[in-house]
Every structure is written in C-alpha cells, then in structure tokens.
Amino acid sequence: MKANIGLIEKNAQQIALILNKILADEFVLYAKTRNYHWNYEGDNFIEMHKFFEAQYEELDEVIDEVAERVRKIGHYAEGRLKEYLKLTDLLEPAATTKQGQQVKNLLDDHETMARYIREKIVEVDKLKDVGTVDYLTQLIQRHEKAAWMLRAYASK
Image (cartoon, rainbow, N blue to C red; front, side, top):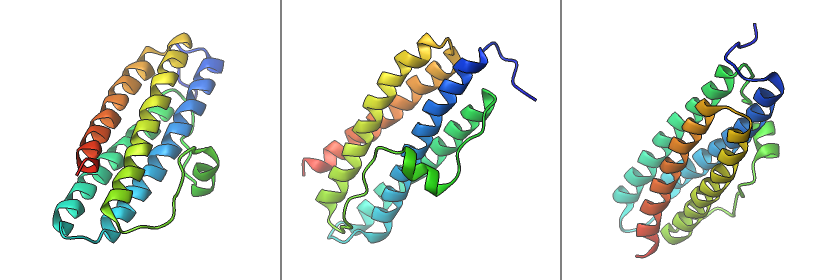
C-alpha cells in the first residue's frame, strides 16, 4: 500500500533517491569509523578507541533513521553493500592505523556529508517535503558536531 501523506509520488521518488544516496554515504562512513575503532594504534589508544566507538554508534542510529525516513515516504531503503558502493561519493582510502590520517579521513567525510545535505535540503524543500527537510536539518547538525570534534583532534 502506498503512503498517502500529501507528497506527490514523483516527488517522493526523487526524495527517496536522495535519501538512499545519503544512506549509502552514512553506511560507508560507519564502516570506516568502525574500522578505525578496531585498528587504531597509538599512545592514546583507549581515548581514541572510545571516541571512534561513540562516533560509529551515532552513525548506526543515523543509518536506521535515514532508512526509516525512506520507508515513511512510501519507498524502499537500499540495504545492499553493492548498491551502497555505487551510490556513495565517499572514498575508501588505503588502510591506516595512524590517528592523524584516520581523523583527517573522517573529518573530510563528515564535512562532505554536511555540504551534500545542505545542498539537498534546498532541493527537497522545492519538492514540498517539510518532514524530510526537518529531518535533514537535524542530520546536518549531527555531521557538523562530529566534524567539530574531529577538527579538535586534527589540531593536535
């Protein structure tokens, strides 16, 4: 049964595509953060291990929320790794155990996400989906906070 929530179907379809792209990016960022949590080496191991854990736990919540938003507007959330890799613009750099490189990689991704979401808020607003605009506005704030925290580590 299709959702009857006041969205024109073609608009809902375009929004679902945007959200599925965000979902793919969030999943790739989650995997990268989890990898760094597992594979960090350095004198502040416990601190960084816990820091990365808090970040991937936040991303885990975000992934679920984005997928549920897609479902709320009457479409299916992408869930296959193969599709995530096609949809994402985030890069998977060479493996590293070094804090500076890990932090820079994650910072770049969170800032990329913030810029992309900021751009898509305008587009979704034109498609007359205030619910998704509201959600994306909250989501951008989460990426901005993560980027701020990573910048604090990057300045060490």
